[in-house]
Image 1 (cartoon, rainbow, N blue to C red):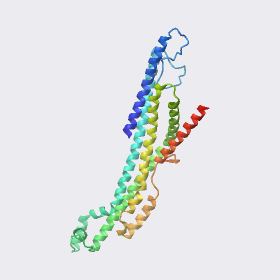
Image 2: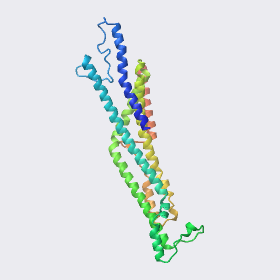
Image 3: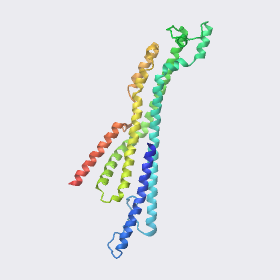
Image 4: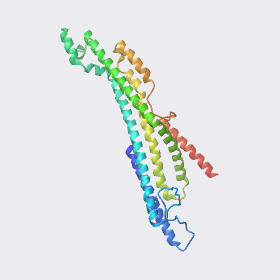
Length: 312
């Protein structure tokens, strides 16, 4: 998905570069056909990749125009690289955090299994010192034989320790998400609002443009803005979904066979797990797929309003 996002942005950048060149060829043919006409626009055949404000007017002279064109193209390339690199970096961090929550879900479900497998050597030594057999009936036989009290105690300790490790892991993920929230919250809110307006205006230009030559440029640019919102919302929803799964995973850890201390700790942990971890845009929107649909609905509303005003 990220590769597609970068590819669409690169194609849009190429269209921004080539659009003025193609238009200049057509303008030069028009100027050659009407060479004696003195009322031709001096900017005819001097198109740039983006409309900019120039203090003394857009340059049209021989070296000045070419330098301005190269400068505008270079500025567009820097703009594309800076925005796309930041977006992909932040989305990668969101993917990483959601992956950590996937691991935490697995850890919660395997608490009892991990307690069965770890620390066997220490248990064997303690059983030998007490003169008890090393074989564990529940693994060798299928009969419900009661284990020695010493083994029950060490297994309960290991189970409780694994639960505490999961809780500490969860706290570290919460700290990471909070830190990322403090960095991204305001900027993502501005980006969401700006992208909503840009999608609206770009779609309006596509549907009302008389010059069909610029349509590929606008279409690829619209797809880039669309995909930019989609990446954040899709993987932000993955983070939210994995966080909401933690309650079910913790409940399925085999707590019914654990001790009272384990159950008390699990109740406290599940009280915190009821609050899912998520990233927000300025505390106004949760970054999720529902937010993506909400933003698209907002863009369409503005788009319909512009069309009504244009028709009048």
